[in-house]
Image (cartoon, rainbow, N blue to C red; front, top):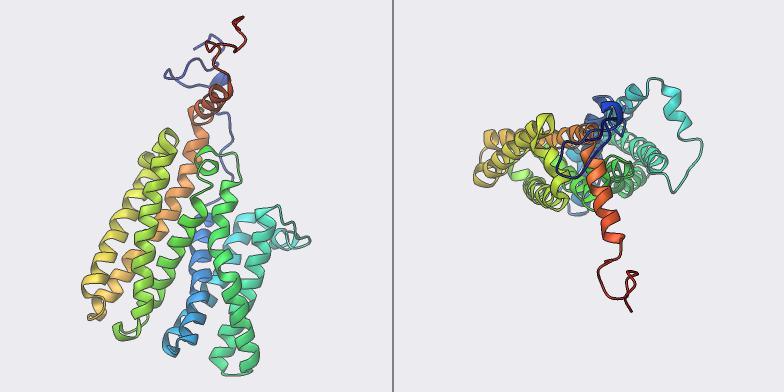
Length: 317
């Protein structure tokens, strides 16, 4: 390391000038990982509701619709709490910018939340069925983007562990949303009514665990934050809870109401912990300069020509 505190070679201690991080840590508050979670539950539940209604499972359709409406009602409150003032959320709706994940996501949240709340209210009142069906359709169409756009949002930052995982994060958040939505509806249904939702919970949780492992493996050194500090603890909780929940739902969830409730609660807890693990990984990645410097040097080295090769500029012909 140089005397001015600058970073020296790879493999030595990584420090920025004056010992300061190169990147600022995210300014998001604890409401944001919960917003990631409720947005996933609401988005995937709205799609499950429409699919169940088309399949003739009215009990599941109604339950998942109420879950979607509740989650979509909580999500804006969490976002507004993080922003500090309600008008800041309204200001994000003044324009629609297709190149901005934040702008697109704000509009998706407004459309999905408004339509699911309308459909849920009309379902409870048993009024205006054509309007209710239209609201359900809009909610189902905007549900998948709501469940996944937050993965794109955090990947569209300079935080190394988020940006380098831009291929996996939307799919990871989508799989986690499927698991959460399935588990949330299973929680409120008798086992014989919850078959499709239970299968969603199991399949989504398995897919999320596989995607998380694949993402961390591909990230290499950058992904090691998922095994350290708070992110590592949340990651361990997520794996333990979802694995136990899936095992219980598969073994006893179709016959035992107790197993169905406990298994669903474990999956929900695991998927919430997954969002917290991803959230905390961003802070840890920004805090340590090596996660910024090492990948940059590797990219520069990969772009440089091999100066020892014939004809590479070393005077040979």
